View 1: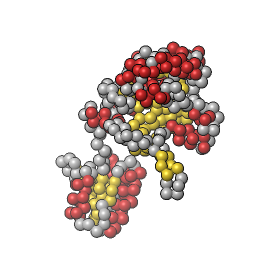
View 2 (view 1 turned 90 degrees about the horizontal axis):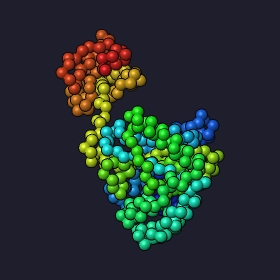
View 3 (view 1 turned 45 degrees about the vertical axis):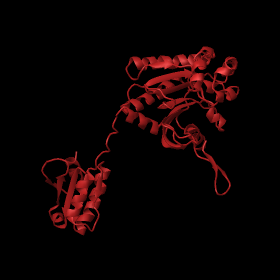
View 4 (view 1 turned 180 degrees about the vertical axis):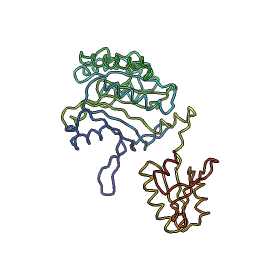
Length: 360
């Protein structure tokens, strides 16, 4: 984590991820009293003090969703399908979905002991870092991308083979729902990967990740899982939850690698050009009414000539210029001039509904 001492001597840690803060907010603001489950999303910066490299920066932005208050495997499938929809809607191709179940407090201790025994037998073959750490958290060895650990974890005991009845039933329910979604064409096929884990203790049962076709050490585009114990750990009542997080910078890198252009921002609808103080006051009112009708409108700054305002309108990329002079006020009409097409200009009534109809 990115921790430091501030000028007052207090120890400060910048927010490293989004799930725990969302769960804290769920408790603090009484969301348990809302109809359950509660569906939430966020997009904000996070900070981790790691060596910067491609796809991993100290300040990164994360888009995430959480569903809190429903333990069913169908909700797990809903979150996974939402992750697929998010990535595929951006135009990304060749996505791979991996899922796993890491059990819960009932069955995981026995599996951890079995995994620890296996790793002890292969201690000399795993990487130097995990030779020191596997005794306290053997699951992290399965998550290691170094070649030595990959060869060992490939033959390691699988968590899905050592689930209790409740976790096995939950995982089978998830797979059944995902199979239905795949058959319906709502998402891509998936694989079960016994090396897919989460290093934090509050994760349980379902874990999943989306990766691009070309796997790298930092290739995960979106990852998530179930965290049923977390809200109780933070002081709330036992409440199930599941969600995912997706690194925006990493998604951008993959969009660039696949040559996918980010859609251009929607152009401004109207620039209001005025000649005279009374005309400008009328346009300010019209602009506000047009915005309320869903149009994007800007009134050009006062003190500029009409020529200067029109130059500004043309350079802004706006679709139309709405031109009004003090003399036009007496006639109750303004000129609507297209700026991006060869269509002729026309006179329009000084009425927001009439102008909005013309600006389609």
